[in-house]
Length: 334
Figure 1 (cartoon, rainbow, N blue to C red):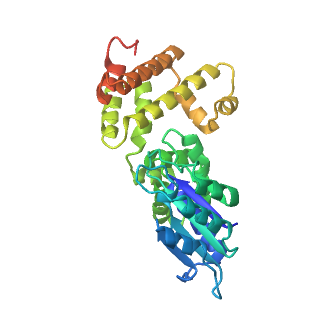
Figure 2 (figure 1 turned 180 degrees about the vertical axis):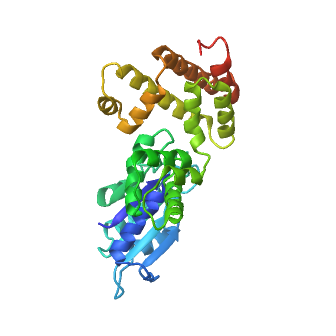
Figure 3 (figure 1 turned 90 degrees about the horizontal axis):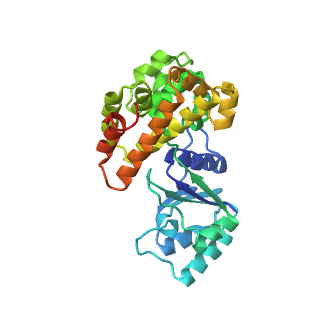
């Protein structure tokens, strides 16, 4: 049954999935226009309009793709919107009777950082789950560099470009984890290097970007440059939630600590496999950890945990807790 429910905070991938379905179903090629009879969009339609869409019957113009934003029907929300039992049964029956030539794409895009999700207790959710396809699109976090790298490699290949892991990691650190931003960066790079196809470090450096600062913070902490690290944290707090920064630092130093411990008995390949990291990332971490002992990493982790406790319990404001973690004399031997 061609009914889909797409939801999540990675809007770029979600939109591309819809485009792939649309191109395949409507057999769209570059330069061809889409007939409004074949591709229709609705934004949280009322009950009657939704039912009419689900009961749509294509005629002589080929298959139909309906993209229907349906937040109010599926998301957990405090807004007073509710289908009565009769309406719910009618929607469920309409899902079951959708024509094989009508493709219904229900979407619930979510703002990044928002914890809303489809209410799986609702009967209409269970109906889609039974007869259709439900897919979540989750945005990457800044600390998930090892997950972003293979995705970026595929994007680079699709763009007709080439670049090694070192260069692609630079792009991630320059641009941030957003796939939409990474795609825009690749478009800029393609223009900069045309007619060449190989991405170089010099080209990436020309892109600039502020997202790299969150990666810089952990490096500055390792180098003992705590005042500079706090300066970068202060800048990030103006546009990012403290939990995102803490999550990144906690994850980074957990992996650095594991990498350090395992380095005494494992190769970079085995460490990568054991910790779920990319081997290239492990090798770079081992370079940074030269001259850093295990006790120092443990102390940093403890200080970050204490800072998190102080912020969440309301004992200290985020910036003061971060400052106390790295500058206070009673916080370990940093």
